[in-house]
Image (cartoon, protein in one colour):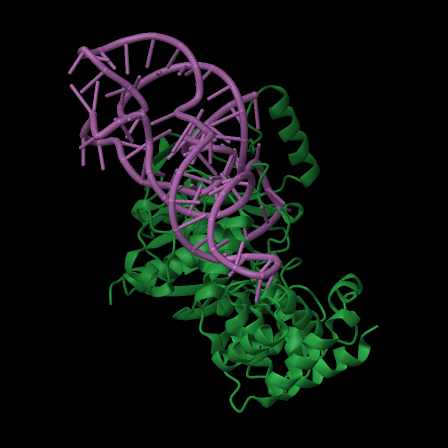
Length: 464
RNA sequence: GCGCCUAUCGUCUAGCCUGGUCUAGGACACCGCCCUUUCACGGCGGCGACGGGGGUUCGAAUCCCCCUGGGCGUACCA
């Protein structure tokens, strides 16, 4: 057990998205690797936008990915007294002040500053005022104006900003609610977080938060800012690039290990290795090989990884997932062939569970109609003899393994003088209704003697 | 606009710190060939990058500077 304490702190204003999931993953991996503590904190100070549904969705997605946490979830909305006390502390020590400027005034100031080529930051109108009129006000933190603020980022190295660039941040709104940049400081400190791993988009906040850590007498934690994830057009990843919600990928038939593997390799590497299990990652992950620049989300590679995990996955487990999917579609799976055997025939040809479920369907539902074109070609009266021979030989089998089935086909070929190329397509259409399926011997063996003979007879009866 | 960050194949990246072993390696995608009863899998091969310009050096993807591109921030959002 090390003393490393990291945290993931999502704001519950939507689903867990790809970027957030990677941040959570990095935190999780480092915590597990160093045997530290992973804290989950819900940042719900934006009362208007935070919802319980979002919290549930985030928790669910983390669970799906296998990211367990050691402490929390803590809700900032439960901790308002703490924040209030800290505001008063700062007010008392003169490190914060009441600001009576209205939103309109602020907007005007910003515009003016921008117009004159300056930084659109608060001009400090209320900074030195000593009266405290009975009017609505916000509380601002008195950011130092001289010198600079610097820190050594564990990923990006040294980052320095002149304090003159900084703003007097609002730490408490007119309605009395504290703001993000303030509570994040208090919570990270009070929760003993000593390494903050978060998105790149927070580097600017970090230099604004550091003076607050100091003002409140807290030790400044270490920081590691992971680069953003962009869309194909190099713009920040958003809905218009396709699905950005982690759980949307579950719906699309992706396996969590594929998502984890993909996410970790976006921005992190370990030599030429591409395939990592969670256990591998816990052993090998390090902030040292996290890249410094933004990466483009590549669905093709995610799909490739998913394909890999489907190909190498445990048929039993895959079977359970496919069963779930088929049942949702109203397919009765109970009386059909053994699901793991079904899965085995599909593992090499499905890229997603959705594809696998679609490909598995015929095992449980006899074709109600044949593909028109295929039937015309492979189920016409010319195939009468083939079907009859097939029924005869397959029906006579005492054992129905792939080898036995193959043997029966050999006999059919011999007796009819036809090659497999002439027989296979007919069997395929008769059994599956389509021209695409796993290997014909496997299909026959897995489907089972009873169903095979029945479907062949039905096909025979349909000949015209 | 201003500030911060960043820059190797289309994409993810190795290499950069500790210059020569880099005619720059791997992976995804793409293309071709092989395998094959369908669809796939698989095997083999191919295409493809050090953003530009200056330095430093015998020698630079690797070190320095400038430019350019991209990202982020600039909220009483987080």
